[in-house]
Image (cartoon, rainbow, N blue to C red; front, side, top):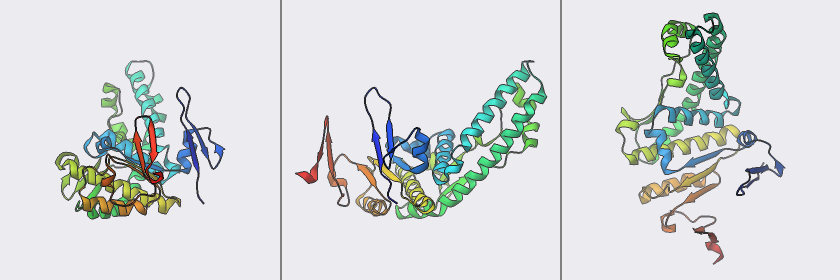
Length: 278
């Protein structure tokens, strides 16, 4: 069933959204019914940035693939924050160690669920990620995650250290996801070109999974994605994007587009012109 989305942006006013004509009360409603994948030059931070950037990205991916798990990372983070606050109260003599027990149990339960969910999501992504990367010339691409279930016993073993520091020192909030090519971690040993190819392969892999699992393709927003690709890679990307649903691609020169777009818009300060209307 086709989905019609209407977004209204007005200066000085909040965003408004309608789905098939019905006004949505919250952004979460839109995320539950649609999926949008974005490439911008700064999105390379997912590959080359700090572990927190990758955790955040893949936890959002988890929510896009399985909306029922979209809140899992947020719920776990809230439980960790509550346990940290309780640790500081105990260390300051304002509470007892018994008061920590419920938060430790909740952190362990939610942390284990998050680790399991991440492993499942990456296992789903890996085959298509490797295939899309291979098509773009990035050989032996791989997603690696070594997170382990968070046991209450492991938290208890670190209790003295946690009390001293006032933070929970173990759990999936400290894990990392590695994007690699063979034995090379692309964060440290990949060129910017390879990092760009890995990010594109990841988006294309996720787009295919969303279509298969949720029954509709995501909206692809690709900003300045073509400038550092050679003509052959542009052609491969265009072929994949053409079969992935609706896509909006920006470029500084229309000649970079490797295929005829369904609509071509020229954007200049204060004006948008439909080139097909000339």
